[in-house]
Each structure stands twice: as C-alpha cells, then as structure tokens.
Length: 478
Image 1 (cartoon, rainbow, N blue to C red):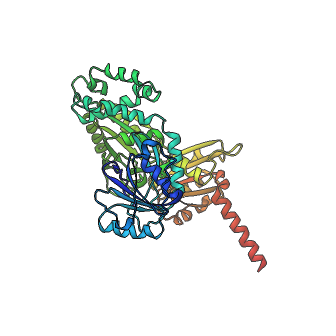
Image 2: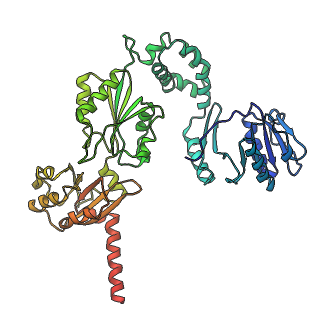
Image 3: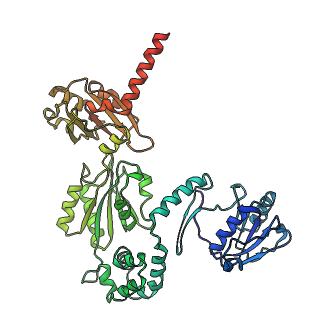
C-alpha cells in the first residue's frame, strides 16, 4: 500500500481548484458533493456552473488573477484538472508550504490521488489503485455499488443519532460493539434499510436493558465464543462470506502457519493475532496448548477464531478442538473452508470423479513414511477410485510402494500439486511408478498427491502430452 486512505474534511476551509473544461467540472461536482467551499481559478475564464445545484453553486468563489500567486491562507487542498503546465507549477508551490495537491493524471506532481467513490451519504467507500489503473478501481466500485444496500448511509446516520446516549448505558467496549452488531444485523437494521425509520426508532427505544440485549450473561460477564474457520488452500478470494464476517468480528485469531498473509490481511485490524501452527519437522505449540488458549479467550468474553488452512474438519484436527470446547462448556461454531484437494482439482482441472471412470474418492493423510505404512492399501486398488493424499511429499516412496504392492498398476496416472490456488502453485504429473521423482520436481510444499485415471484429464497432463507430440514432430522434421 503506497497511499494511505484518508478522508479530508473539506468544510474546514476553501479548496483551491485550478483548470478548465469538462475535467475540472467533474472535480467541481465531486467537491460540491462533499460540501466543500471552492475557490475556482478557471484557466479558460469560463466559470460555467450550470450543472450544479443552486445550493452547491453558492459555495463556489470565482477567483481571478494568477493562481500561482494566490493567497493560500486557510486552504485545505489544491486540485488541478485540465490546467496544463500550471498544474506542475502549482505542485511545486503546494509542496513548498505542505499543502496536499492532486494534479490530474500526474502521479509525479501529486501528493494524493482521487479514488473511485461509492457515496451512500454517511457511508463512503473509496477504491484506489494508486493511480495505476482507474478503470480497475471503477470496476471494483461497481461491484461494491451492487453489493451495498441503497439505504446503508441511512443506517449509519440512524446509529449516529443514538450512539452517544446508548454508550452511556453500556459500560464495556465489547458489549457496545455487540449491541450495535445485533442492531445492524437484526430486525432494527432491517427496518431502517426498508425505509421504516420510525418503527426502527421505536424498537430501539423499547430496549430497556442494552447490556442484556448485547448478550451479557446474568453475571454481567460477556459470553465468549469460538469459531473454527476454514481459510481454504491459500487464495483469499476463496474465503466464504461467513468466514470473512467471522474474521471481521473476532477479538483474537489463533492461526496456523500455512494460512497465507493475504488471508491474514482480512482480519479486523485491532484484533489480536496469535500464531499457533507448526510445519512438519519444526517445533511448535501442542494441540493441548491451543485448546487451552481458545477456552481461556472464550471464558474471558472474547470472540475467538481458530483459523485453519483448508477445512477445519478435513485433517485439521477440528474434531479434537470441538471436543475440547464441548467439555469446557464453551460456545462454538464451524465455518467450512475449501479443502486443498478440491482447490487443487479446480485449479489444475482434475475431475476427481468422472462418469464411468472414477466413481469414488478417498482422502487420506501421510505425514511420514510410518503414516503411509499404516494405511490399508488393499482397499485402494479399485481403478475407479481417486485417491487424494494430503501432506504426502515425504511419504511418497511409501505411498508408491503400498499401492504397487497392493496391486495398483504402475502406469496409473498421478499428480503432485503444490501450493494450490496460490500464485506460485506448481504441478508435476506422470505415472505411479515415478511418484518420488515427480515430488523431486516440486519446489517445496505444502502439496497433495492425486492418484487415479482422472489425472490424465488434467490440464498439466494435456500440456505435457502436447509438448511431447511437438517434440516428436520437431525430431522427425530434423
């Protein structure tokens, strides 16, 4: 992030606007919408404000003379649009006195950039690409526009009217936050969004005990909660909406080492982050200690999230954690995530099932060779079964030996798919007999192994075969 998003109060002083044509008029309309007092130097001497509301037009001062010698006392910011070389000169002057300036389409001479804006009254969303691609920013804005309720600004204004008086009746910060979450997410918020503000106000005034409404127990303590959240295999866009909501509501997040930084960025900024994961062969906190941390957080009234790579209940020890929370009497919930087997299959186009070819799927884990040795491979010899092995890179030789000894064909297609859904994802495909050699082609895990005829339908297999055919043709031509 190069530019820090900051919302300026443009009603504290005049904004200097320099330029001409439709470009400067677009900025004029934007400043007027923010309630700014505008001192406009029209470089073409055309002060046409016919497109503005009369109230907004009344706040525009038609300045005369040279903007380069203008009095800057009290000026909040300077904007140049369609100003030509004057924009560069204004930039030098603005920076010399510490005033923020934007010269349209000129990042070098600008100290701030204009975002794409979603305006819902008291709710304003700004989207910026740092000036790199305004079109991308507009596309993001369009999606946000479509997702936000039309009256979300009314909801913010409604809460603003009651916030101070209610805070005097709710002592604890955590309870205050939960109170407003219940208001926003419940019937009162729905009434405001439906335009029925009088009914919403009546419902809010009917709450005689705000602390109880917020979810406090009879003892006065805030009730804690633990949410087991599946972070998926790495791509933050694969997080569910429910997972994002849990991360934004959390007071503390206990996260595994395999959770990507991009997903950690989705956590509420002031939430505590506690790393509790470990990698194979490296020291780390034990499961018992993780359980104790979650229980202690919940019993202290916090909303805790246990953030796990993939899905909590697929080789994520989520079942053990649920059992510990049950025994401790702690409230909990589970938010599923996309497990690595499904994420890798989607990315590399491996159909885990295929009509008349692959009718069953088996998921298993093989951290080490002894894990693979404990598997009953004789149950996995059906050629119409796809076998997905988690954490199987180290145990790849034992996986191969087990399947071959049980009778699976050495020519069975297999794939090693590493860091699936991430930008550095990697795949190596071949035959079961060559599985350890395929693992050697991978630049580190985590990785899954997919074993079965379906791998021959994958994108890496098709590309490999195509390259082989091209090589043969070139050899023949030579």
